[in-house]
Image 1 (cartoon, chains in turn brown, blue):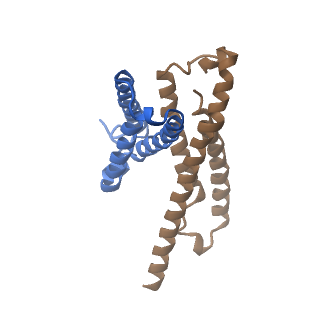
Image 2 (cartoon, chains in turn red, purple):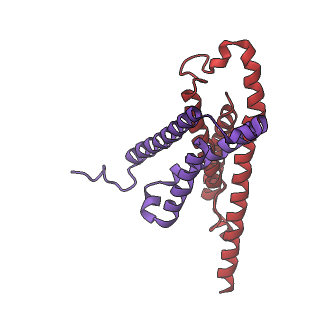
Image 3 (tube, each protein chain N blue to C red):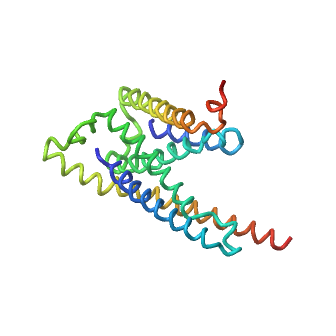
Length: 130
Length: 100
């Protein structure tokens, strides 16, 4: 019913965090980077992948909810909000399925980021040996 | 059905992203993010539904299946439209910028 709202809210937060991190990275770059940091992927780039998953996923899920008539393009947006009895069900779904969605997407992103980092580190070590 | 169609689209776009440099220039990664994000979310939805319905989850009514198939295909078309819109705005191959 309103499960996609949770990952969408997370997407808003991570997008703001990405902008802040990007600004800090730009400032650090102006001051000069140590050589060891040259080939490392920026944290903001990693966060952009999470943003893509969260925005993309919640966007398509919003369409699904529109298809099923669970949301509407005008206030109060959630059709269940017109009936206070149904609101409890919406909050229950948001706190179970919605949170589950946000946690799984973030977890998969974290694992993916860890694997990519390890691979990059390995290939860098390989280059050093050659 | 929506989950299956979305997951299939995610796998296909990821393979295209991996093998084709031109596709990467064309920002096909956006489609990957959309389809993978939606597939993960629908997977959680499917698990929750399975916990509630148990075996009945795997034997949906024909009408529901047809509706879900249409929804899945519509989702793919919507994602493609978003991607095409993004490509036309960003113009990564400078086709629009260089046209006479």
